[in-house]
Image 1 (cartoon, rainbow, N blue to C red):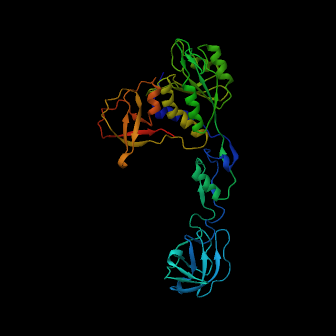
Image 2: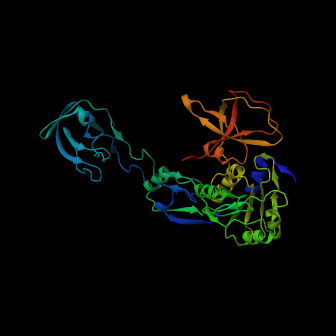
Length: 396
C-alpha cells in the first residue's frame, strides 16, 4: 500500500472532480454560492457626476462671490435647468451635479442669506465624484469562480442583477461506522461513545457550501456497510471510521463490492494515514476518513474542503500563511505532520503555538485550535522564531 504525500494525494483526488452543473438562483439566495458566470456592469457607476458632500454646486470661475440660488439637486431627483454666471444650486451628497457646474462648495464653508449664498474660492472638480468613478459599463465586476459574500452580493446588485448563475451544491453523504458509536440522546453502553464525528463533519460540509446527507451509524457488519454505501443518495460519500486494515475495518472491502476504483490508498500524514479515496462503480466519489474525530477533521480540512470547492467551481487549494514559532519543535518523523495550533496576531506579527497534546482522539484540542501547523516529513528541529507554514481554520 503506497503512501502518497499530502499534495500528491490531494492532486489525485481533485483529478476526479469536476464542477457541478450551474443553476440560476435569486440574488438573495446566492450567499455562499460560487459564480458560474462573469458579472459585467451594464452602465457606469455612478452614472453621472455626483456630489461627495452636502453643499452648493457652482461654477468655480464665479467664486469667491455671493451667488443667486436657482434650484436644488438631491439624491434621486436632480436639477436639470441651466446654471448661469453668478448662480448656484443647493446640492446633497450623492446627487447629480448640474451640467453647467464644475465644483461643489461644502455647506460649512458657505453662508446663506435668503436667495443668496456667499461662497469662498472653489477648486475645479472639488468634491465631485466623476461619472464611472467606481466602474464603467462593460467592466467585469466579478469573475466566474468567485464565492459570493455580502460585499460581492452588493457589487452584483449594483450591476442591476436580480439573479445569478451559480454552480450546484454537492450532496455529501456522511456515514460513520463502528460498534462503539451511538447517537445522542441514546444512552451509550459501557464500551460505547457518542457520535461526535458525524455532527462536526456535517457542519463543516454546510460551511463549505455542500449539502450534508446524514446516514445512521453502521455497525461492523459487511453487508450492512455495503447496503449503507449503496443507498447513499449523494455526489460524494464520506465515511468516518473503518478506513484502516484491521479485522473490524470493513469500509474498503464493502466499497470494493460496489466497484471501487481506488485512486488514493493511503497518505503519509499524521494524523490520518488510513485516509483513502476512489470512484465507485456508479460514478460516485468516496472519501474514507479515519475514525478518530480529530484525525477525520484534519483530513477533512486538507482533502474534503478542496474537493467541495472544486465541485463548486472555486479554487481548491488550501491557503497557507507563514507564522513564527512561539516555541521550539523537535525533529519530525517520516510522515508529514499537521499539528493543531493557536495563532496570535498581536502587534502586527503572526505567531503560532502548537498545542501540547496532539493525540488524534482529543476533540477538546481541536475545539480550541484555529490553525494547523504543517511539519514536512523528516523535518529537522525548528527553533522559536522560525517561520513555518500554517493553514488557518475558519472560526466564527
